[in-house]
Amino acid sequence: MFWNAILLALREIRRNVLRSSLTILGIVIGVAAVITMVTIGDGATAQIQADIQKLGTNLLQVFRGQGFGGPGGARSAAPPFSMDDVRAIQDEVSGIAAIAPSSNSSAQAIYGNTNWQTQITGTSDAFLTVRDWALASGRNFSDSELRAGASVCLLGNTVKRELFAEQDPVGLTMRLARLSCQVIGVLESKGQSGFGQDQDDLIVIPLRTLQRRMAGNSDVGAILVKARDGVSTEKVQKDIENLLRERRNIRVGGDDNFNVRDLKEVASAFTSTTKVLTALLGAVAAVSLVVGGVGIMNIMLVSVTERTREIGTRLAVGAMARDVLLQFLVEAVVLAALGGIIGILLGLGTGALATKAFKVPFVLNVGIVLLSFAFSAAVGIVFGYFPARRAAQLDPIEALRHE
Image (cartoon, rainbow, N blue to C red; front, top):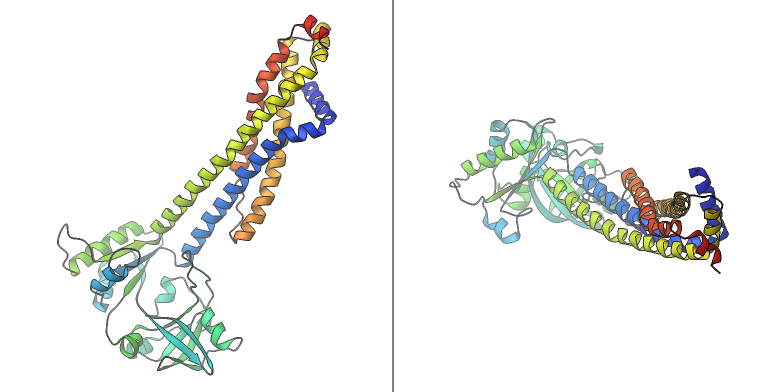
């Protein structure tokens, strides 16, 4: 019986292809819009997580001042860190895999007739371990170079490309403003961070070299800490905060003049925001599914009116009211299901093109695909029931008299 109802529904759809196509258009648009929006949102979330992951796994950043990296005024007013702070964290905080002091400056890098304004990072040989950064060529700093503040440097991929093009810079000498510096290594490319910054646009030199030859002080601007795998970064963060409060003589209840930031928290905040926006856009797009359901109900009501004599004939020859109800209900569900299938295909195709245009990963969310199809079928049941019930309740005699 059910299979016969499906065959009858398909026959009616074929008889009125244009009208059926227009009827399911709302369902198609609604399903496609939901899938496209969710696909873009999931891709953006995955891209943010990947970008933050590029900064390093299990990474904690310790800045002076408050805010993200310390706002200008607050950061300059807060006292800087020292190498004693770095050694204290390394010795007294458990669960640390590596720690790297860091100070930044900017300078014009010069090689031959080419120059490039870039960021200079003074740090230790642990910087690459903390940031999960590999060398494309060359070597890391030696202990003697770090202690002596030698004029050696590692180049980011952007700097290497702008100054040396296709030439291998390892072993060559360049200038950072007035400082002559020998290139001993080139970093692997990391691309842009989640904050739009080109991570490859930097030159890394020993911290003591930057302090003595460029900054003229012994300050440490930031401390990068990598927690061991399996160790709670929240515990490490809390231990660092307690230690620095003690070392910086901050009273109980007083405001910290430093900021320990766990990148897992940053990733969580960004992904939570994108998920909320994705859900909002998906909900707005789902409204068109309801509009499509109203369209199905209207067309089915028209179909009942047009086929009144047919319904009367079926009832007169022995068909039960539930048979007529099932026929029209199945027809509505088939229309909605066809719209759902076409909408899924259109949504996945549009989502793939959109993610490619926005340069974010294409993430197939099987759950939302199945939910969209189920919702479209449910729309067919809900909005098809009233016309089907109306058809089933027709009086056979009155129906046969209908012109």
